[in-house]
Length: 416
Image: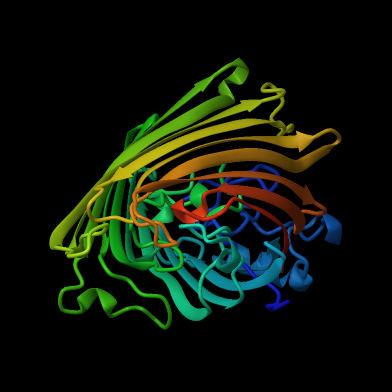
């Protein structure tokens, strides 16, 4: 048995996300971590009612938040077993958010910095899936993952972000999908966007002309790498670039308009040298394209009670990329999760699954072939800052040609 250290994951709700209540299962900007409360816990709250294991630092955390400085850490640990082997993975995130208005500078500005460290072993080494089994899996690294400045205007209807960033925050994980551990519930496996762990330099413009419609257009570096500062890879000869655009439509219904959903779709185009896959004598292309679509629906148990977070979340996703130049060319997935189990209003249980069309099977068999997966979990939120999540996954033909395998594990997470 090879054991990695304890996992840690950061959670700062960057300015791209609307303020979220700590007890609602909203996906954070970084899909690998659980969102904290929008503001530091008031000092008068007891320790157990607070949002961090280390409390309010004698009032310093609240004072920093009021002054426009937010510091957040999460400690997490993944322990999974498959085919008689066990792997433990560690992940450390540390983030700093500066609010220009609270700092007394100007309105609508945010500086966000995220530093990550990944260590330990990957359970997918024993599973053989085409995609990581968990959304924390990566080779060991230490890096500056995000460093960007963001500016909002026109009552936050216009948003501009420039710097190193994770495209998953705008084009990947659905709003309520962050509770699932399987990596395919995050960034689409068909889309080679700059995303965890290979975040990259980029610029994004987001516009919301009316309350129900948002449009986004972004450009990212085409060949980002993991590790180090990663602030120069976009300027290498032949690095290329990635352009992605999308739109999302929201709707609300029911008593008080609390129930509702979001439908989003987008397209991407990569300009870089891309090798042909699935053939013995590959050609080289200078472009690659694809599209994606997803829909989520949130239905509350008691929609007229804003203090009751219990309810059902349904998500459906599908994506496509050019078959002759991508390892995964088709993806479809769906999930259902219930937040608030019995008297435990903050616990979440869910089940989901999907399939991938793999051009080159991982085991070397002739392709293309299909991989199917199913995941079920129960997230036990012991306090606002500690959660324990047993997780079960089953893979049919992992990697397209592997033998079926059952994976079991647990994720522990604590907000420091």
